[in-house]
Length: 196
Image 1 (cartoon, one colour):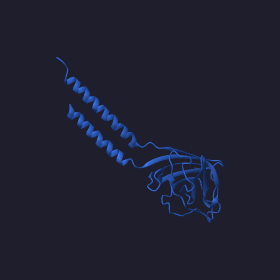
Image 2 (tube, helix red, strand yellow):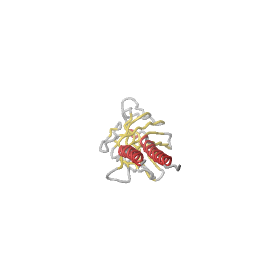
Image 3 (cartoon, helix red, strand yellow):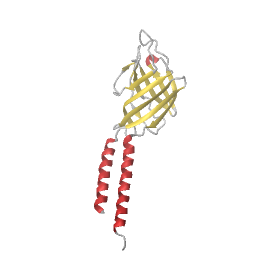
Image 4 (cartoon, helix red, strand yellow):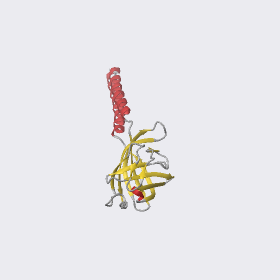
């Protein structure tokens, strides 16, 4: 009886601890709705910041923009600021955004549960067209987006929601497995001690 319970608990503990140790990376979905028709959606991933413990330092992410005007001064031909892009993970990077504009100074910090969720330094994304777009927080409920070569500067709103990870479901599953093992062991022991 006791050996079955101990074996079940040991199995669940090892399984649960290994999953919890791997679940350090945190992900969010975001959507930006601009006042001038520029919209964006994407996903960002990061870990708790050492320098700013109440913030997440983002290390990767994607964005997909629609409704942005083309950059007419970024090159000899117009450059589209619509479409996909990726987060510039190195916060020391100065991104050439077309024409004479550079995007720099981002800190890639996300403040989950806060309003604004981004500070004024915000994030910079490198678009597949080669240009860049910056996204930052101005204050509660107020966000801004700047397109390459100052093609557009838009104010809007940002919604950030956590992405459930498979590891979280596995952790819940391991807890339920442990509970099932304990109930099985309890039922087995009660059957063994039935009166004659």
